Image 1 (tube, rainbow, N blue to C red):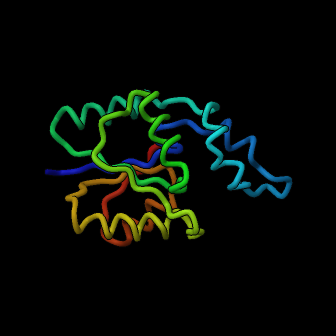
Image 2: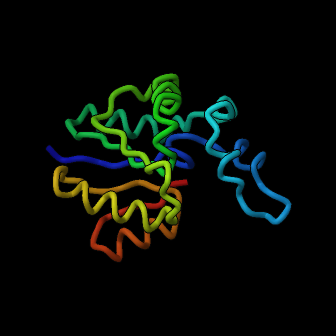
Image 3: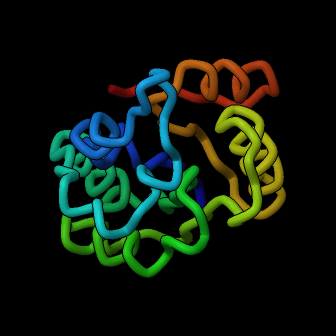
Length: 145
């Protein structure tokens, strides 16, 4: 089976309101604030991308989700995805709680490892640095916003 990989925040989910709430005065992101399950209510589904995911699934592609969200957010993340109509995916891969690598480093490592098990055709992400890192490692990736 062929697979397609999606990021969550910025791709399947518009998390701009949550992000803007978690910007420190130094203009840096307060990650503990941003990655707080109690703030997920602020997010909105990105219907156009969710429809793309559903279309790919209906055409026989497997779906894997690779997110920078912490493993401790698994339950609230699955609840959020289901609430937004994203219940059909094969696997959800989340960042280990103690991992503080950049998204580009973490996701490049994760997707390289996933390629041992899954024939991933492309990864959709909103982070230009992540997409550049994946492409430089020979992994097809597309920036979605």
